[in-house]
Figure 1: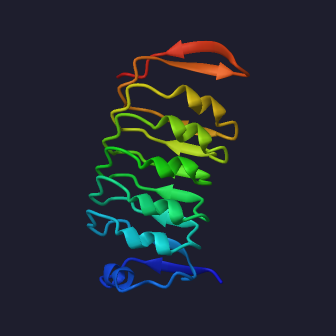
Figure 2: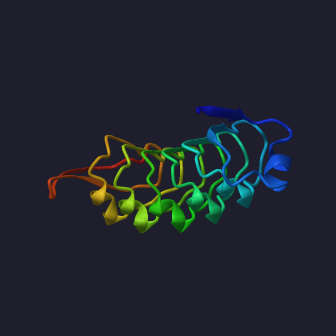
Length: 168
């Protein structure tokens, strides 16, 4: 059953009152809802495949997001995220969109997201990329515009081919 749930005033109450562990929600859209914190109870939505958190005021994501073992798409653009919980790197994400946040680094474990096809971290404060990103063999789209990267080298089959400056 494909269940979609858009934000309503009762969402936090629903989660806080004990959203059932076996909730069938697969798609949850909470963008433009003014939320400043994602409740830990989000981890109860174990069937969730898509989580959209764009245009809020989030500064962090709860560790319990790691309980979302079916999550394939996480979009949290236009927030105030400063760091990512390490558990993000243990998930089976295919799409991770974190543009327009306050991220200064990506965790080295990002290389564990072997199913990642799209990574969008444009308009952050990232100054370097972890070498472990070379493990992202399925990555097809990498968006890095407007960060604090001095140089970024392109590697193909382990060979460095070119470097360029991404600062404007």
